[in-house]
View: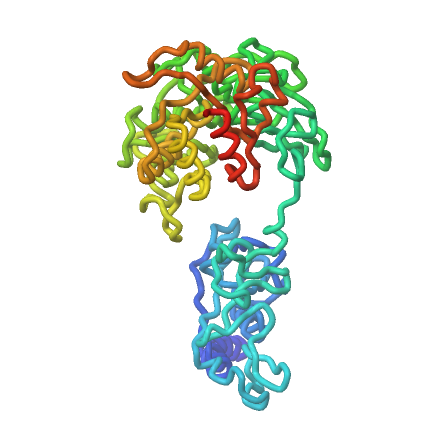
Length: 540
């Protein structure tokens, strides 16, 4: 008789309890198949409690009676019942559990439970999903009312429209980029270089930093492009140490010339793309000399040579992935190999799923064989599988350049309208032509945009850009002048007078060669009225 009563009692509990719960709380529960558990994106922020419960229905009941509980999982083997707040679809995922008897449950809300938001507290007595606050019925902690239900406030990086959608207890607000996060992220802290942004060549300064990496000790490695060095800043220190290159441009094994991409492995060994030497260099930790591990040191477009390299990443087998933007490809160079293999792009610019256009940044997710590529010229991010590199998949952007939430644009400032007008004044008054510095070769898309804007306001086409030869920018300028040797460049043009306009003080760097040829601009405002007057004076 006892056995029969026990069996009947259990049967009644499983049939009757869900109906009772639905009548009181007016919500439903969705239960997963067996063998799964909940994995939150931020356990510290979403985990509520853990209980020992006799059954799945008991765990369900506990969640229903807990104001902030929206998700739970229950293991019938250990009787562990875990409760979480949050949204199952955006704040975690259901994953395979080591227990075959574990299930995940989620509370399914409806607007009926929240009809009394804003009403006097007497209207929400007995309602688990509303609280009495300042004499009215309000959403509970960590939730907000969206006009229909009280939804869970969102975590770091989640999209938002208003700050009430973000976890205010974590000091998150809706940032201007429509993501939840602390206001502190809008205020940067200088961790390397001069705080005022001034360029320099001392151990505490940088000049056109192009790449960055962080090792397991928290030290920051910076490829200091114009200083031809890689400099390391230990965590908390603004005084750096040169760890690759000498600070003087060159092509020996001790030197670099225009370092850009950088990768630091788990042993703090350094791989750096030596752009103007057309090679990838490797510096073992604490080594004085580097060794060439990819490229020949000579410009080319074969599987052994490159143009200027943008980015470099290295996997655990020491395969080097190299972004060769001006050849519209990414190649892989195996350890100790003498040639590379193509892993993305065809070498021909294009915007289909097989081609790239001026690809720059790389990110390798080795565990999933995923290679993410910043396909700069196509304003998109492409995903390639390293074990099957035939076709890429667009994972961000790809809808043309723009500022929409489904668009990207090359993040390089071009030139202000005021600067354009000032340049136009100089050109009109002196009949001068414009030559860009060699660094613009790294940004062909930006250069094309400048040329288009020059054309729009009536400035003659560019004559080109200076060579990258020489140790300093002054050397580059003089090599260009010497190469043309005052000869006719075009049928009706010869070089008679010339000036350099730059925010780097080249007169201080080399007064002998720059005197009467140099005009210093302001870093903040660029070409000003005073710049125009001085430029016209020197060219007249």
